[in-house]
Image 1: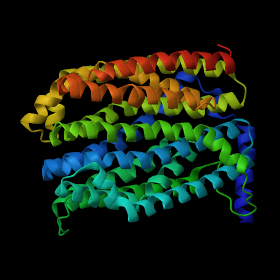
Image 2 (image 1 turned 60 degrees about the vertical axis):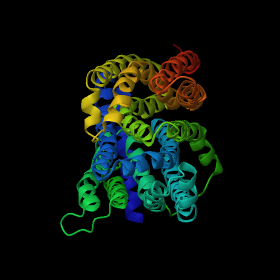
Image 3 (image 1 turned 90 degrees about the vertical axis):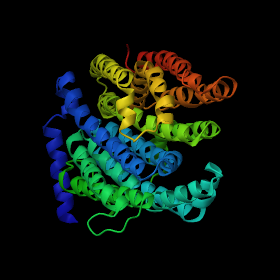
Image 4 (image 1 turned 30 degrees about the vertical axis):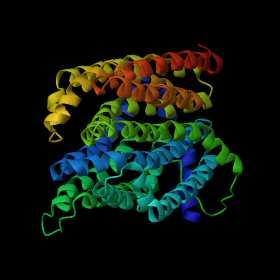
Length: 462
């Protein structure tokens, strides 16, 4: 332990001698070096969700419907992991920016305990309530059994989800998004390799169907968690978990969740939204539910680069806010917005021009194509508004305000969207359902823009 403390003190001395890249690197270059690894990480993470669905769709459309239904529960779990660790990331970045390394290490240790406790709660829910939750999703007994099988594995063995996110955020807090990317890609590659083997029973493995997809997923998450934690131990120059001399401070938990709770709610909104929309679409057909699950995973894949760009803003803005460098915050603002808009326009073109090909990846039936082709074209026209709302929210989180992100997401995914989906589906028909996204995305954009401008004027002087 004494040797470890010497290494940490040496790293701290090195930090004092060498300026952090988030303080001195040209902003456009910094945004590029910070965001590209995050984008690739998130794209790969989203890709293995898509690969799961592709392989499951080859198994049966009903299995695809089951994964679409359970996705709302998985997203709730992800919400707690991402939200907690976004709050941790924001606080760590501010401490690192202020050169308070001992405080950063204490907070990192507290973050580890929080993640383990949260994972334990979800694991117990999976043990005792998986069947009850599946019963709320569908009355079809066969479909309910598939939901239960998939949910039990993913929720009970959820520790990899939380620890992987935790390890990645500690690396990101010191500006190392490359190692964060490596940890995520390692887990994703394992998952993608295991998917067909476990679903279809290849290479001597028993054929496990939807349960095999779940097992492949949790193994990949655990591998990613191990890699992330080892990389922190070996390569993180500043932030370390310290058990010796550790003192719990309730103020650390409060500071983490000042940003974390709004982010959890923001992420959980997606879970509630998918659960509610699936309930509405189930009255139309199981195929409509399967399509919505496919769309949501495709949309998440598209939004991952924008999310990576926004997430890169959190440590950059947090560091420079902590060190009082307002000009750097202004430069980040001017660099992020045009990049996000360009990526959103590219996504719009892809979804509008190639909906049949995108759905064809999932062995789409004629009924799914009939529902999905016009739906993807209608929805694609909202991508610019959605991207800007996401970026505004992350930027505000870097300034220590998670409320803007939370309310913007609530408007675009719940408050406006769900009632409109219900009204249009029940009083018109499903072909009109997707126009609800036009209204919700524009409303969220207007709110988020007004709010972030106020926050920037108050905290950054522009």
